[in-house]
Length: 337
Image (cartoon, rainbow, N blue to C red):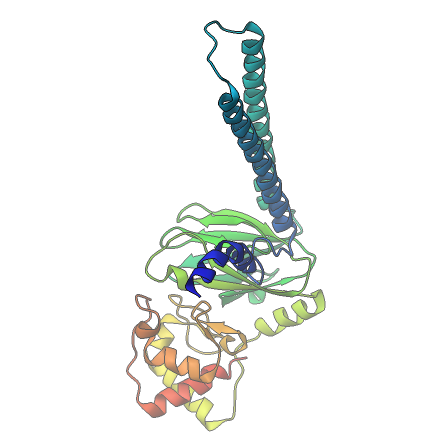
């Protein structure tokens, strides 16, 4: 049985590997203009290189077979054969130069298109930190500006200019289904243009090793039709909702009285910290801790109770809370839709 499995492995391995090229974080499952161009470039390069490799293998096999058939070596050189070999080598060198030049030009223009944007594009600032993403939306007036974290909402069919900024170390923004990679380097602003051609949720990831929790630094791009996006923006610009629920009210008091309010901001309250993510509408986000858990009251409570066990090395300290305080503060955060 083991022998059969070993013989079948070379046959089954390619389909199994290709199965990982689909889904919401795949450079081959593309739904954005930039990603489509990159996919075409990848396919072109792989196709040409495969043809070149096949031709080289054919030439090598033919040369070895020809040498095998020869009974004796010629003492003198054959001028015609030498001329043919010279022409063949020169043609191969010329073809190599042409292919590399074409690849270089195509790569340059494809990469350059990743940062081309117009003046009427939607502009969003994305900050990379250890280990989460700060997202800032602008407006025509200061009261229209708002912040969120780890979740970027964009309208379908519209160019979006991302202003990328690294705060602590080098990060790399990569949403493979929508665009290519772009580094976030401290002190050096970069830009990336993305455009979603279809509504959906696309997973992104930091693609530059940035520390202990690099693998747990994900984000999500939510592409929505323009009316749905406009409604989302309208709700996000509002202050945190108030509640008459006694447990939620108690949770707000606990949040504001503890260290939480010194690191996090909740618009409409006295909490105005800037060290951690803005929590004004955290209950409306699908995930917390940069994609580590789905946003539920239970996951919020677990994260607050012991963030260092769930995501070692992050900058959130363990805040001492008794069970009643933990229940109320998790209820409060879950209510912030």
